[in-house]
Each structure stands twice: as C-alpha cells, then as structure tokens.
Amino acid sequence: MTSPLTNHPFIPLVDLKAQMASIRAEVDAAMGAALDRCDFILGQDVVAFEEEFATFSDVGHAIGCANGTDALYLALHALGVGPGDEVIVPAMTFIATALGVSMAGATPVLVDVEADTALIDPAKIEAAITPATKAIIPVHLFGQCADMDAIMAIAERHELLVLEDAAQAHGAEFNGKRAGSMGHAAGFSFYPGKNLGAYGDGGIITTNDDAANERIRFLRNWGSKIKYHHEEIGVNSRLDTVQAAILRIKLSRLDEWNAARCRHAAAYNAALADIPGVTLTRYAEGTVYHLYVIRTERRDELLAALNDAGIGAGIHYPFAVHELKAYQHLDYAPGTFPAAENWARRCLSLPIYAELPDDAVSRSAEVIRRFQSPA
Ligand SMILES: *Cc1c(COP(=O)(O)O)cnc(C)c1O
Image (tube, rainbow, N blue to C red; front, side):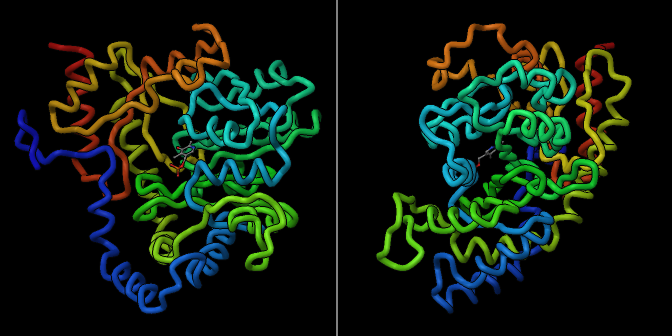
C-alpha cells in the first residue's frame, strides 16, 4: 500500500506483518505440533511459557489467563480486593486498568499523572488514600515503569497492595528491576499489538506470593483444583496452548526487539529535538517504548497531516478515564486531573516497532517540522 499524497509506502503505527514474516516458519511448526497433540487449553506449551515468562520477568510465578483485563481482575480478586474497597488508578491509562477494578466489584479512585511522563504522580497518591483504600495500580504506560520505589514506600506506609499494570511493559526495567517483579502482583496483556503479542487474546499474572499464585491458578479454572471439585466461584479465563506456543517463540526474541525499539526512539529524540512547539516525553532508562508519544497544541491537524503523508500516527489516549461515559458515575468534574486532560488533548503517537523502516523517523520528522514551522 502506498499513500495517496506520496510515493512512499505507508508506515503503520505497528506492523505485525513484518514481525510475523521473520518468525513464520517457526510459528507454523510450533502451531502444528500443538495441533498434533490436541492439548488446546492449558497444555504443555502453557506450562513451559509460564516458566519462561517468570524467568524473563525475574519473578517467582506466572499464571496464564485469557487477556490482560482478566489478569488485573484475577490478581485483585485473588489478593482479596472486592466490594467496598477502593483502588487507586492513574487518570491517564487505557480503560482496562479501571475495568479490572470494576470487575472485582471495587471502586477506582483516580490520581493525576506526571506532566512529563503520563505516569501516575506519586506525590498525589497519599491525598487519595481513604480508610477504604486497599490497593494501588501503577500503570507502566508507553513501556515506561512508574516510580516503583516511591509507590512501594507509600504502600508500605499505608499497608496497601500494589498491582502493576504491565500490559505495555514486557521486559521494561526500573532501577534494574523488571516490570512485573516489583509489586505484590502484576498483570500483562498479550493483545497482538503489545510488545509481546499473541495471535489472538492472552494475558498473564506474575507474583512472588505463593498463596496468590495458588489462588489465581484455581480461580482462572472455574475455582477448581481437582476436576468437578469447585472450592469457590471462579471464572473461565485460561491461556490457549496455540497462543502459548507462539508466545514462546516471540519471548525468545523480545529483548532484541525491545532494544530495536529503543534505537528507533533515540533516533526520534534526535530528529525532533529542535522542532518548535513539539514537547518530547521524558522516558527513563529501562523503557521498552511500547509507544513513542509527543505532544503538540494542534494535535488533530498534525495527526491528519501525518496520516495524509502515509504515516500511521495515532492517539493514546484521547480521553482521561474520568472523561469516559462509562465512568461518569465516579463524578469527577472537568479539570480535576489537569495533567491527564492535557495528555488527552495533546498526545500523538508515532510509528514504533522493531522492524520500523530506516526512513520512517526522518519522514515523520520532516512532516512534523513542515507542519510546525511552515516556510
Ligand atoms: C492492553 C492493555 C490492557 C488490557 O489488556 P487486554 O489483553 O486487551 O485485555 C490493560 N492495561 C493497559 C495499560 C493496556 O494497554
């Protein structure tokens, strides 16, 4: 596909085809082997993948489930969070963070994000804590870890649980510690477009807590350890064997793919640094760049200019959580979370993935430069 206004090929926000081509033969063989065994759900590749993902994330246990939203819900439920409890969530995130809380029957309590990272602002957390607060969910948004040292210190002081939403941060690090290894538990998503994506839905929970590990394992499987012996009301949320077989292949490449994302991000930083009216996001060492996000005043017009030039830029996310119709009942007035609202109005995501073509950064930068300072 070429774009109408240029002779250049279209550059999508994320190109799953390029990555699939690089591993296709291995994927076909692994899927074929799983089909031959017919162990479709929680089969041998799931057991192996759970171990490999735990090792990758430097954590004691990893429990596969149906998707990242369920991962957050299952972790909260297993840790005892439920009706009457409040859970602190950043005001700028994908809705699934808040949905995991709602699914557990608890109430999301929003906290504003940092102006320069879009990560939950630790300085604003304590004001949101009430006697009903049970947990904090820091979101490692765009592939960058939230300030886990500050958040764990607050949690310890107030005896709260910390659940990392690591759906965008497989392999990310904070002060040398891997995403998913720092909180009491973490939820990851394997939605196809994530840094580690399946060819369908999938998710995983990580934890160092032996009791939580055991509880999540039977909650995901209708609340039974032994077939037909249902100890409590569980759910059906499991990882398919075929997806686990694919994920094992991709996990073996992930550090390399994340390193390529970091190189592309560095190239964007250099190419965009001196363009007037463009604000770069502050990304720390250890970020795995799920998204490369900039901010600008005339965001919607710039988005259209990029799309017209064959560059698949996007918006993550156009609304803060309290602005969504689904969460109007939380009753937050407009202006309550100014930083989150600022991100929603001004953020723009540029294409980033390991196989990003060499000229993608310079082409994007040229369109942005022309738009921001027309001759
Ligand atoms: C993708 C995502 C989720 C949800 O994962 P699914 O697998 O799509 O259910 C949760 N939180 C964040 C921050 C995400 O980006």
